[in-house]
Image (cartoon, rainbow, N blue to C red; front, side, top):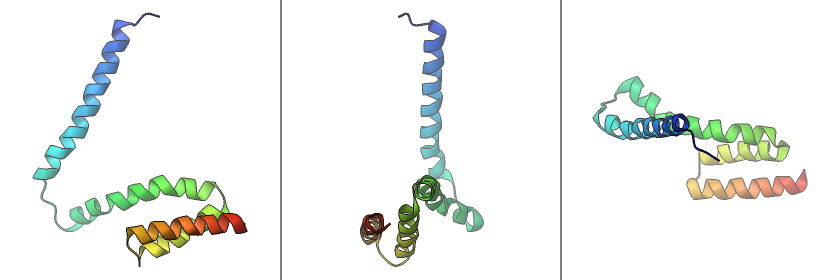
Length: 99
């Protein structure tokens, strides 16, 4: 198997661009002063990403997982992270055995 020079250069260029965009976020984020709506928008990014990752799996795997996700979301408003995780695990186990 031979390695094409053009392919290798394309892979290296993509790696460099990926690295630069990721590291640039660290340098730019320190210089940003956010207030008002911009700060609220940036504060909403982590939960939005979490929901975007979890929701498709929770809603396409079955009723037990969908109900457990809803129960866990409700628990997240009242409990700390460890308690929320425990509620989520227990609820999905119980619901899988019942449904």
